[in-house]
Amino acid sequence: NMGKTIDSDVNDEKYQDFKQKEKDLLKVESILMEYSKIMEEYQSLKQYEAYIDSSSIKEKLKAAAELNTGNYLCTAVITKADSKKFKNWKIPLTKKSFTVQYDATVKAGIKDLTKADVRQKGKDIIVKLPKVEITGVSIDNDSFKKMDESNNLFNPINIEDLNNAQKDLKEKVIEQSKKKGVLKVAKNNAETLITGMLSGTNGDYKIKIEWK
Image (cartoon, rainbow, N blue to C red; front, side):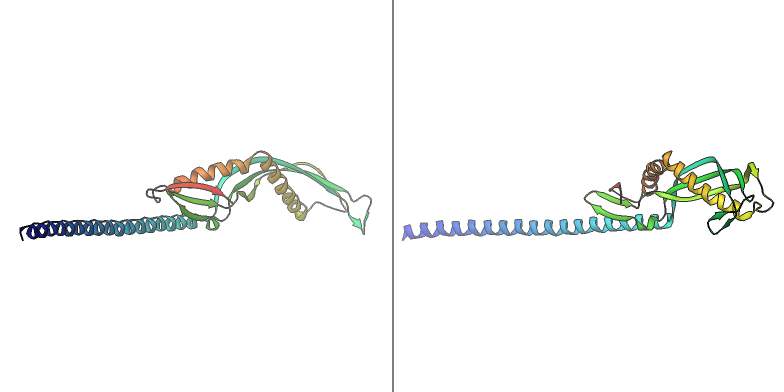
C-alpha cells in the first residue's frame, strides 16, 4: 500500500508539473499572439503613414502644376527674303529682304507635375517625374532692332513678314538652347527643387526621384 501511495504521489507531482508547463506554454502563446497583433497594427499604421505621405506629396505636386527650372537668354538675328510669285515663278523686281534682331528667353522644365507617379517602396517614397521639355519661348518686342532692309515698292515689308520672322526666330532659339544644355540644367534643378519642396512631408521616408 505504501508503494502505491508513493507512486500516486509521484504521478500527481508529474501531473502538476505538466499542468504548470501547459499554463506557461499558454502564457507564451498568448504573449506571442499579442505581439503578433501589435506588429500587425504597427505595420498597418506605417502603411497608412506612407499613404498619407504619398497623398500629401501628390497634393504638393498638383499645386505646383508647371515647373520651370531652366532659362536660356539670348539675342538672336534672323534674315528673311522673298519675292512675289505667280504659281512657282518668281516675279522680277519684287524681291525684298530684311534682317532683324530680338532678345529671346527659352524656358524649360516640367509642363504638368500632376502626371508624376508617387509610390512607396520600403523606406523610400519614389517620385517618378515626366520628362523635362521646352515649356515656352518669349520674345521681347521692345528689343527689336532692324539690322538691314531691302524694301520693294511692289512688295513692301509688312506685319505678317515680321510675325513670320518671329516664328522662325523661336524655332532657331529653341534649337540653340538645346545645344547649350538648357534641358540638362532644367532636369538637375528640378530634382534639387522638388526634393527640397517635398521635405517635411515624408516623415521617416526618403524621397527618391526617378524619370519617365
